[in-house]
Every structure is written in structure tokens, then in C-alpha cells.
Length: 185
Image (tube, one colour):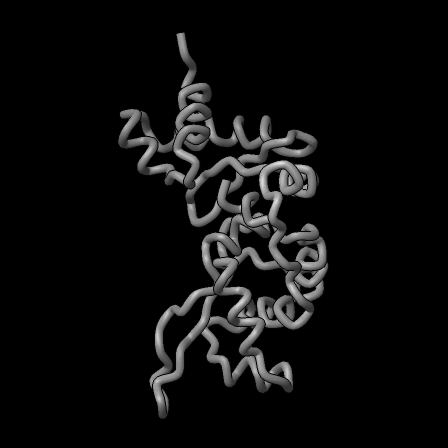
């Protein structure tokens, strides 16, 4: 007989995208508390040295590859390497993460230089997105982080951001060739 953990494990594997606890509970006709318990067991199983991790973001759970093997995954599955995030893009990403929602002008003022390229690269890589417009002259765009950002940096939600220095260190660990396959799969 299949256990609840086995069912959830298979569902998350096949789904690819993150699934919410309440969705799983509804579809499996099981109380959310049982889903939570099964997910805790699976999270422990798929962590540490495992090649696959089970991550949580915004109450969604999803399988992704272990960041420590990102280079090997990228070499096999992504023969045309994407360009590295520049230090300007990394700075811009940290500012957006901590100040969101934030305008380009506000980012530029903090950095002291234009952030147009950094914003462009981060949007191309689905790490930031337009989240609205500021109620000010010209109605400038407001930027915020995406679910891909949360997944990539293994954050359950934006309230779990580490200190600024810790985030900068995590950003520096982004693998060569910046492998978004990791975040998407």
C-alpha cells in the first residue's frame, strides 16, 4: 500500500512546479496537518547531501536540484551557457530584495549609477518583476522579487531574507553560467 509520503513525492516529482499544502490536502482528501507531516518527512529526506532538494516557498513545495551540483547539471543540460550575473546585477538584486517595491530611480540613487542593465538582466532571468506603479509624477514602475528568486535562494518567503551581508554571500555562490534550470526544475 502506498504511503502518503510516496503519493506526495510522486505528485511533486511529476508536477514540476510548486504545489500548495491546501491544494494537496484538497486533492488527496487528507487534512492539511497530515500533508504538513508528510512534507516534513520528505524535506528531511531531500536535503543535505541529496542531489535533489525539496524546497518551500510561499507555502508551496517543489523539487529542485541541490545547488552544490548546479555546475554539473548545467554542463549536461544547458550546453549554451547563460552569462554570469555581473556585480551590478547582484547589487541591483540585493537592493530590490530589501527595498521592494522599489523604482529604478531609487535603485540608481542607492547605487550611485544607472541600474538599467542590471534590471534588464534580472528580469530576463525572472529574478525580479514589475509589481506595479508608484503613485508619483510619471508613475514609475515598481520592482519586486519573483518566486524564482525565492526558489533560487531557498527562501520560504521574502520575510525570511537573511541579513544583507548573508544575502550578498549567497548571491556570490550563484554558479558560473547562472543556471536557472535549478530554479525552474
